[in-house]
Image 1: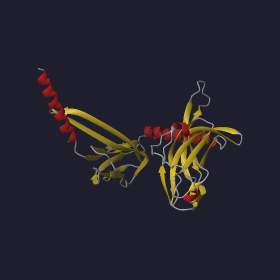
Image 2: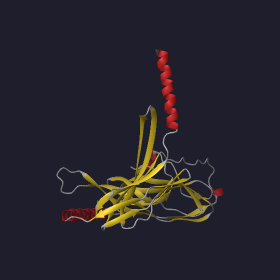
Image 3: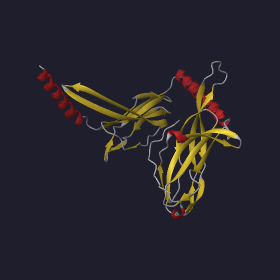
Image 4: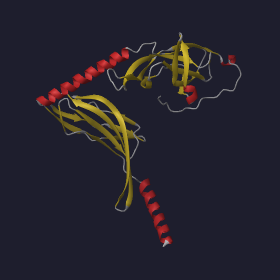
Length: 310
C-alpha cells in the first residue's frame, strides 16, 4: 500500500510539473462595458495572460477621456482540469475612462510586447447612451464635491510653508572627483507629519553616470538644525554619480509630490487625512576635481536596492 502511494505521489508530481511547465498560451485582451452613459466613469482594461508585459502601447481613442491610469493588477490560479494541473497568470493595466457625448466609440487594438514578441488585443465597441435627468444631477453633484475637495486640499497644501518642509540636493562628501563614485543626496527636511512621496522626476546631468545607491535604514533618517529650527530629515534618494571629466557638473531641478497627513478640522474625534504637496527638487552646480587629488582610501561602490517610502 505504501509503495502504491509513493508511485501515485511521484506520478502526480511528474504530471504537475509537465503541465505547469507548459502552462498556458500567451493571450492578450481588452475589455470594457458594452454600454455606458454620458459622463459615466468605467474601467478600460488591457490584459496579458501567461506572460509578463515588457512594454505597452495605448492606441489613440476618439471621444474617450482617460481620467487616470494605468494601475497594475496581477492574478494567478491553479486548477485541475480533466485530471491535469493547469496554471495561469494574468497582468492587467486598468484605466478609468469617461465618454463625454452620446454615440459609438471604437477602441482600436492595443499593442503589448513580451519577450520580443508583439501581441495585439481585440478591438472594442462601446455604445454611449444619453443621461437621464437624475443621472445628470448625480454627476453634477459628484463633480461639485470633487472640485470642492480639490480646492480644499490645494488650500491646505498652500498653508505648508518652507519653514515646515523643504528639499535640499547635497553631496555626501565635501568634494567631487572625476572617475570616482560620489554620492548625491536628495534630502527632505520636515517638521510636519510626512507619510511618503510619489511622482518623482529626479535631477539629471550630462557627462556622468548616475545609478541608484543603497541606503541603510539607520543612515536614511536623521535630525538637523537649520536657522535655529530642528527638522527631521530623510534621504529620499541617494545617487551614485561618476563624473566623466573635471570641470563644472550641473544637475538640473526635479519634482516631487510629498504626501502629508493633515489633521481633520472641526472633528471632535481628531484623525487625519492625506494631501499632496508638490515640491521642487533644487538643482546643484559643482566643481569636479581630478581623481589624483582624492585622498588615498579604499573606494566601495554602493549596492543598488529598490526605493521605498516612509
